[in-house]
Image 1 (tube, rainbow, N blue to C red):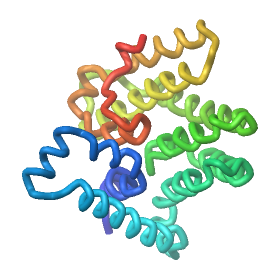
Image 2: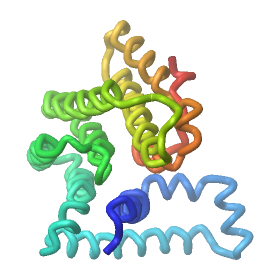
Image 3: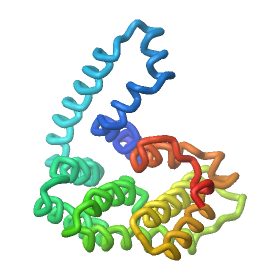
Image 4: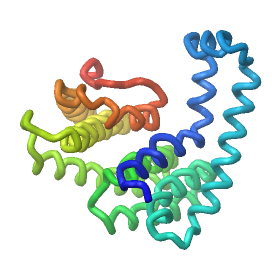
Length: 237
């Protein structure tokens, strides 16, 4: 059986990418990636078909694993399933509300938002709900729960240099996610004072020297949340 961290990485930093066709379309416009395709005589159309095939296979795997009798597998796949379900129903307020409430209950049941990257998927689901006036209150409730969890972790854990690699990974992820949620919050409010406060926190908790030694801790979250490289929020403040 895979170790917990290995399972998390495999599912949430690899498998989950299969459902990000939007980001892959952007990749197909990237000059460096296009040059890479040309080097190996791969056309854009064939690359697009390959991405679509990978996503189709991923849906098959997701459908099988979300109902697995193996408790560990079922628990690990749950946040991906809810995120994918939310994307499918992003224009259906009734179904999206149900998904949002289910995810809220899910987070309420476990304070560890790092395992299964719970906070990441929660922010993406919240972002979809926030586009609907009807669902904004639920989106705020979900985002506030995540915010409080990240904030509590940061306030109760050491920031010293003498940390193991695993501790550095945890620290870097929580700090990046806290910076990210503040950056997102700034974009969701029209109150200038609140915007400045959120952007200030996003800047302060941007990856520091310690975090930059373990960039892999938050590398994938960066692309899931922003569809691009965003290693820092300092320039936004």
